[in-house]
Length: 114
Image (cartoon, rainbow, N blue to C red; front, top):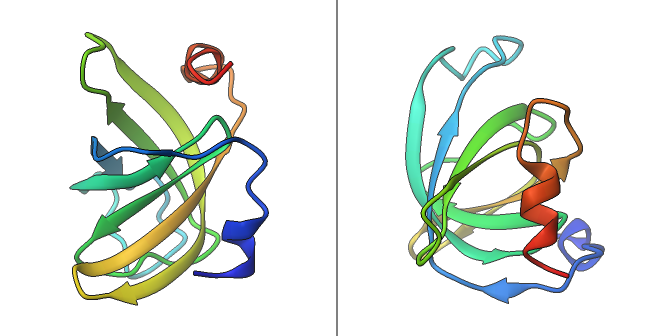
């Protein structure tokens, strides 16, 4: 875990939820535009989330996330920046910082954590 992980403002909620990460930036040659990667959360908060996946993502990449929460019949579309990667037994943990965006569900998402 990096120092960025300790700087998260929101209270963390340990949850294993489904996340679909969509690659919308072609500025990183290791990512294929339009690729969707399904993975699971480790924890979530109003300002960030941590997921476990099979491979690292470039730090600084801006990605679209679709998060499904158990018991809520809505998908949350968010934009987030990759802040850090850490190799773990299950694969790679990736830390994301969620951005405020006009065409995202950030207001509804933030409201879940009040």
